[in-house]
Length: 360
Ligand code: 13P
Ligand code: SF4
Image (cartoon, rainbow, N blue to C red; front, side):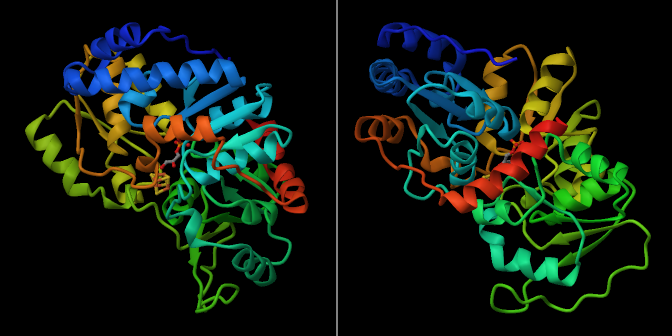
């Protein structure tokens, strides 16, 4: 279900709301400045008929004051596909805003940063996917949504961290024994493990479109992965978990499936950002350790003040960090940075996204 989030309308009302959520972690003078910006954003949003989508990794003051919808990539894709506002502002990174444009091309989609990159999206391009298709003819290609439109356009299905296992299982049901799953090496390995597949990880030899030689394991069910990694999640280690468990033996560890398979197998639960949030909301007691981007930890802690949430909060996604309340206001004022996707690429990428949405 897609529910619009309601906020107080005045700066004073927003300040009270932010103080209640974030008063323990952000000083009042900062919240006051942020609430004045948020009031202006919400006023312009109504005036210009805009909708704001906020990824779970947004800075806490933004996350709790302006998005009409918040969530993980899967949920926000669904919302953006149905958005009927004139302008869609995506408070997330570029590949997410591109996904919104692909799904809903008649809307003006804005990203509040000129860049908004992602180490996974930067790890692969369309030439690389074509090289893999030549090396593995007839093998269906699943791309994690954390890639750009030209890569999605070369694929058969998209997936997110919230439905990767379902998408792979759907292909297995159709009789596929080999599946290419790009570009996150760790998400691919974690998904292969859950779906009973062996994995080979391929990489570029030099220029895009060239592959380093690699011997495929002699396994009946084989996933073909790509050597891309999330620069945030690859930093969490099994020692982080062991140290937390040594200090707090009852702690339950939640990790994002972009973490290494070792980290995921030492965790009690792995899931998308929204799945982690739901886990926290549904388990009523006990300490929790979140292994994901640190603003997300702050946002979950703010929504669940009665829970003891430990987090290794030194790892901020620098790309998500480019999106601030200040930049969102500028984006809305000047209607920048407009996301465009060439129609031929958009139409192809749309098919891969539609197949994902149809699966779940
Ligand atoms: P989610 O789809 O789980 O929100 O993840 C997006 C992302 O970029 C994680 O690093
Ligand atoms: Fe990309 Fe990782 Fe940042 Fe997510 S957290 S946007 S996967 S770099």
